[in-house]
Length: 395
Image (cartoon, rainbow, N blue to C red):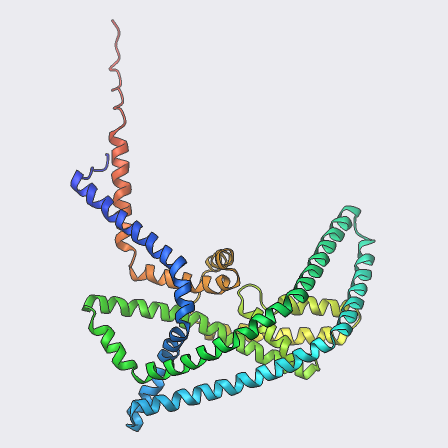
């Protein structure tokens, strides 16, 4: 039996609703693509101050309830303590990294010679392996190796050529960064001190339904960003600590710089610190440095054990994604936004799934199903009726 057709008035209202939703979606995407990046760049100190104030507000509120001191004074103390502690830690890390970086560039020539000797040893080893492999496979492997080495040389040459320009640009941005830092600190204090007043002012201009919906959306994005991102940051800090301790224990040169770079790699989904440490250990085996290979694998094994034990507790079920969705979000994010897209892809996917569970898209889905039934009914009504079967019998 064909589906019932909508009346012209119902069909007009249906497609009008769908058209309005489509237009609003396009406008939101265009605004997010063209307006959001410059606005974030312009207002980044205030956005970060609002985020930090949101994180500090529970502590300030608890202190205010227990000590019965003025909120502005407590906000000032908390902000000063937080920035003093973070500034001291950051200053120590930057000082140590800069010291190691200066020493690294001082030893650049000797490090290049050592890298060349290591690569020669690896090439000799690969040549010995290639002697027992089929010729076609050997040729393909050699071509891949030559292409990889050529790309590495090009990257190193480009980095060496552009390093002075990047350093000059960085130095030129120091005054603006200093002003932005001062603005960020002041904004953080002002927002933290007046956070309840600002929140009451915003919620006071909302209806009850809008306030309830905004609270649910806030919880969803807090779970996505505050859950997923915070968990990844905590895991990366744990990996950074393990790497620092491990490199210090084995006496690795430039251990702090290496730990910092590997922990940044570990923050990026799929990549991880093992993408560097495992090949590093293999190269150490090839050149005959068996102790270094074992030490690197032990450090990497501790990192893997830490992730296996800590990740389920830190990340939790609320931020977990099915593996295929996680892979898709990482790949699409990488294609659209590079490394930052790889990090934000799973976060936005978690937020989108939670919005779907909240029922935000339920009316749109219902209208789409109704439109599909109406189109199907129109197509069925437009078919010619089949001829009735003949009753048989002849003249």
